Image 1 (cartoon, rainbow, N blue to C red):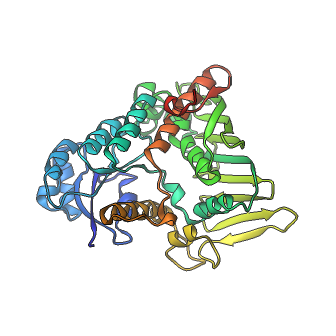
Image 2 (cartoon, rainbow, N blue to C red):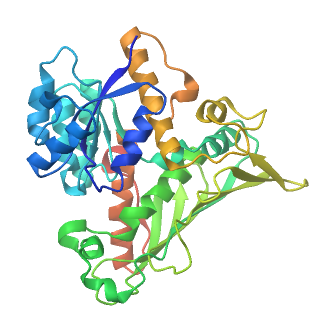
Image 3 (cartoon, rainbow, N blue to C red):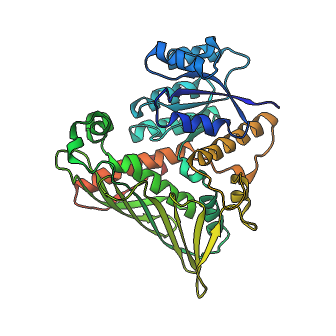
Length: 387
């Protein structure tokens, strides 16, 4: 079987996320970039698409034109990535799922819990893949952490501590900067700013690694810059459905922090620590043992980590290669479906629509708890609650 056809909506020239997706999708030779509607300005999008190598008839002016153009083609796209502004994710994802396409949606998948539940039900009913780009879970050592937890190396998980804190919005003088202002405007961002932007990455990674979902939470949210209506800092306490305790801090005013995504997992038999800014090292402290440094690419790692590494030990692998692992997982899932076989278990790690829904439920729960002085609230989407 040759390359799968891939299309992209959004991610145009000057986009922060577009190049990472195009690098990730093309890295392993699994996908051919075949179609795109890359800009909200039709002529600009068509021109950029052609410069990237798209055929003139597949460099579309907008997503609706792309949907109609691809729907009837024998060589139609196998997967479409939605990398448009947040408020458009639901409409576009829904339309492409209904038309029978597999979708990878940037986070947040939707703007409301109700929309998220609709997408989950639609993906299940159509049998189409709806993945959500929590791309940091593509890092090899994050996947190795998950494997270590799953095989019992840490014993029962007691505590997980997640952080996604940076200082890039700490300057109060940026209050009128349009690239910053919209993030703290409820009319454009919804009920949450920092937690919805970064906190859900940390929460998803914690759940991904420990294999447990957030059951309830208590949040302290604050706008450190008084002119902001939505929070720029949040501290969230969590209880997971498997018994683990969670502590999550996310901030955009932490001067001195750059990216700031870190995860620590503490079990009865050992602890793990990983940082996205030093992704090649995983620190492992077994009970009554000595601190060990696990290197990405070394021998003896899990199948999940081995499958996710491409270069030899000691060489850095960065964010686009983590994204590439999500695309590689999706390619394996699509090929397995086409060939009528089970997919490789080591590749069955891509984030699902259910993960996007749980994230949106957590966003609303954090907003509710923050307004109620930290009252504990249910963090689960209604459709996943018992009774």
